[in-house]
Length: 497
Image (cartoon, rainbow, N blue to C red; front, side, top):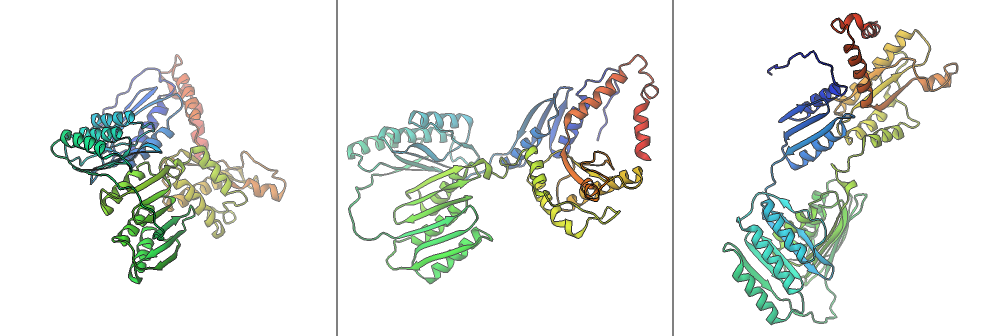
C-alpha cells in the first residue's frame, strides 16, 4: 500500500465522508478495481471473474449508493466460451423467435438481429457475445441463413459451428425450396456447409405413437411417465433423473414396451437433462419431436437447452422450446430489496424473539432456530448496511443496561457471522433502556422492551453528521477545532464510561 494522501485546509463538502466511506466498502468488495472519489460522484472501474459475479457486484454497488452521490460503474467480465457455437432461429405460425442466439462481435450481433427483425422478430433477444466462433464471417453466415428462412416463408435454421441445417416448412414447393437453398448454398462463406431438408407431408395412421413425459413442479417434485424399452433403461432413467434433480422426489410412472423408435433412450435422457435446466416445467418426448416448456431464472436457458439438444440429438432434430424467464426465480436478479429483507426478518420474528440467558449476552438454546432463519434471509439479501440494535428494560443501572444491550447486539452479530452471513457492512449498537415500546412498570411490558431489532443504516444520518462537523470546521476559529467542538469529545467519554 502506498499512502499518497494529503491534508487540505478547505471546507469539506457535505457528501464527502459518505462518498469516501462508500468507496472504501466498494474497495473491499472488488478484488481488481480502480475507484475515483469526488464529493458528489464515485466512479468504479473493475474486473470480475464471470458474468454472474459481474451482475452480483453491480446489484450490491447500486444498493449501497449514498444519498446525493452519483454512481458510475463499469465492470468488465470475460466472455463465456460456447461450444458448439450455436444460433437457432424459427419462423412459423407462432411468429419469429430465437431458441439460441450467439455472436462473436457487436457488429455480428447487430447484423443478426437486424436480419431477424426484417423477418418479423420483435422480441428482445438475449444474443450472447461469446468466444468460440468458428469463423470471422459468423455474423454474415447467420444473417444469410435467417434471410433464407424469411424468403421461404418459414422454417427452422440451426447453425452449430460451421454446420448449417435448414428445415423448410411442410408443404413448401420443390421449386421454391431448390431455388432458395441453391442461392444460400452459393452465397455462404467458404467455411460453412449447408444441409437442407424438405419434410414430407404427414400421412394418417391409427397406430398409437409412443410418448414419454417428465414434469417438474414448482415444489420440486419430478414425475416420469411413458414408455422405455427395457428394465435396464428404466433403472438408468431413474438414476439419471436422481442425479440431475439432486434431492428432489422422483415419482416413476414408466412401463416397458416393445417396438420403440431407434434412439428412443437417448431422446428420453436428453429430455430429462433439458428439464433440469428449468425451475419448473414439462418435457414431452415423441418419435419425431421433443417439446419443452416451463419457467426459469436463467435468461439464457433457451440457448442452453437448444445447444444441449443439438449436441445430443443432432442438428436435424425437431424440437420446440417455450421457456419463460421469471425474474423472481433468478438467484441474482431476484434478490429482494433492502426494505423487503427487513420486512422478511420482521415477519420471521413475529411472535419469536431472540432471547438470552438472564443478565447475560448468551443466546438461549431455544432461540437458535430464530437466528438460523434470520441468517437464511440475510444470505439472500446481498451486501446491505444493516444495524443490529439491542434494547433492555429500565430495571438496573442505566450504564449497565447500555453495556448489556451492546453485548447482546454484538452476540447476535457474532452468531450471524458464525452462520456465514457477510456482515462487513453491519454494525451493532446497544441502546440500553432507550426507546421503550411498552410500559416498563409491568412484567409484560419489560419483556417486550428486552429485544433485538434489525434496521437499515440510513445514509441521511451520515450526511447530517457530516454537515454538522463541516459547519463547526467552517467557523472563524476552526484552526482550533478541539476547543470549538467539545461535543464529540464528551460523547466519546460517555461511550467509554
